[in-house]
Length: 390
Image (tube, rainbow, N blue to C red; front, top):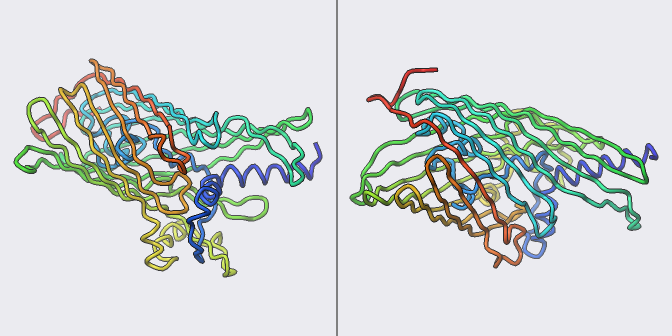
């Protein structure tokens, strides 16, 4: 393979794959997108912002403060210490953006070990983009690429009181891009380390005359420094701030009704196309906090995503769910409603999430997510909400 061609292809693959959400957003919303003086910077490893589990996805992706289980690892890791089970495993698989690329998918595995006072969790994500064809400006075939990405997490969560917990997650992420061109093969690998910091609070309450549990959560995810391409373009990790609340009402002895709402904002600097300032010079963590003030207030408010959902559970065996995810212009996934259902049998729980196909302009239309969860060992809480440590 020609060395210059190899370099160009590597840069092209990096920019296309790392900046996938920004590019797709511009293409999908070009007829509605306003001509702002601010545009989003390129985002590296965007798959880390995908919610893999079906239960959270079916509630409009409102999960920061929802009822805790092993899948809390991907929305609010601190909540796993409130899980009612000692040992849990979770498996999820979902096709992603099928209207754009047919064989793109995300697979997820999570496990948590909990004693009621402290908990540890492990999770693995595998994101496969599938076979991708690259051509030059003259439509000449350059080769076939097979991008894929991995993320491995370790989480520690601890209760500081019977109702409040903190959590910390360390994450290793790797991206592999392989290109076959005219009988030769080329490999490119990129890696990063990121962290999450999270908190979860819940309290018993009375709502509308029913006994209830109200909860609030916060998760600052994918904290880490930016990287640069060979062309010196800054690429940021998808650092995101999620804040959420929920309320679970015991309607009667058999029924439970849960409402949840999240707010989220991407914490990356804005690029000013008409100004020579380079956001890549913004240091870490200054670049993360600058996302609150580097645009006019109205633009900052427009960058906030809103998620809300509900879950009705009967006999703790059957659940139906619905929600809505609102995303601002410039987000490649757009806004969409969500539906879902769940079934629990002994230690196994099956959850499904579906994004309706009526969304003509949404790349998420007709997406089906499936999750399996296995729970073992019910925890016996003490009067203070603790049991003996590990």
